[in-house]
Image (cartoon, rainbow, N blue to C red):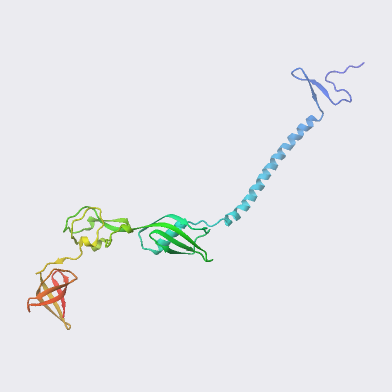
Length: 271
């Protein structure tokens, strides 16, 4: 009678008992080793398949993206359109546009032309026109600034103005006084009619725009008569300003004449 060892395979049986390290018995199928090997072989294939899927999705997305960009509306800003329109059509130093609101359905492109319906200073309304006949109304609040002359410090009446006495400052055009002076060359060398404070806009009625010639001032009369020019001494009979008409008396004939003060010493008379 033959005895089989514990580790020897029994003929016709598919299971071999082995003692586990914990003292029990473990059963192992013949095919278990093959299944494990199959899983190890298939793991790299699944990884490659996942990478291939990712690459396909990326390529498709890249092909779709340009058409999506082309289909997107052109980017434009109604505020920038109004600012550009005002800058190109009005001679202001600075323009501020805010609180822009598009009435109705906005159009996905910039207008072909713009018209002012109301304003354009303050609460303004603009028409955005398109070649296909569409018209879009846009509300906005517009502020405009211009440079005006201001005094650097306070000055007394009779002060003769120099360039160092002045500086240019931007002001809201609606707050600029009438007859405000913007060109310093027009007042430099002239005197003040009255005292003025610092940092105030300078207007024409503050300035002695032309020198006043007092009554009784001795002058030279340049008399033009039928193409002939005669000079004589005279005397003013009233106050006058250079460039303005003034009454004078001819000291030779003791007759009154009317002429134009061309400078502080000369009166031009046309007979």
